[in-house]
Length: 335
Image (tube, rainbow, N blue to C red; front, side, top):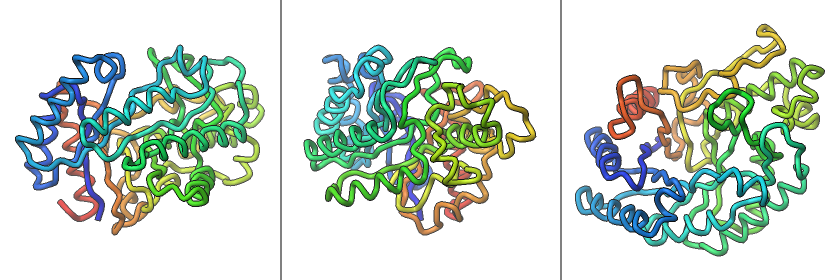
């Protein structure tokens, strides 16, 4: 049976308390993924100290906690100049050690460019470079579990379909996940595991399916640049749940908008096919009734509700996360 976690900002004591009380009120262990912002929190000495104090106060109130740190989002100027912000990840690992947190979420990317700029590196080179860096980080922090997350289509504000980052490792297709697992096993890395964000997988599936349906129209569109011809040979169609399996210890779960048949929609990909994520479970169109069987009802995976607040709610009191958790529990027959 899966476990469940909610997400809250490490710097916001009220958010942490809200999520802990929601979990405890459902009779669940207090499992939280700590969202971090980089310059706004763990990179600032005073705010970093406040984050650590928040975690300790939560322990004092709720007893043992099961926590995970999420590495801050990438800084556009940094990752479009360098290939990978290793300093950021190392700092998050140090913060996790200070906070006595055993897991850290790391994004899978390499050599990002902004908008339609030419790609800097091909997938084979980027994969080898990223894998080598993850192996280095894993050996640097042997007591931390590094959870490697798919990025999907990396939309930037104002989320207009033209503002985005792109790179050769955007999608973490199922066959790439299999190859990554083979690399991890060959290297003997016991503290590295891939995992999937279901909404990011939706964006990847939408792009894959549009690329297959309209090869001529999408061929030179940089938004589709990480969907290679060799990928199209691996599957006729992709569904977001094709990316998940019960061997993943962690999943980010939210609803999104999936286009099952782009051939009926026309060659121009709609905006919501590129930016839809963080929706309350049931607010999008993913077939959640099928999810327990796709994941495996006996999976030990922890399902992390990464859901934006609903109308009239706030990040401080995000009831949409709790409602989504309750719905998933019901589908798995545990609530």
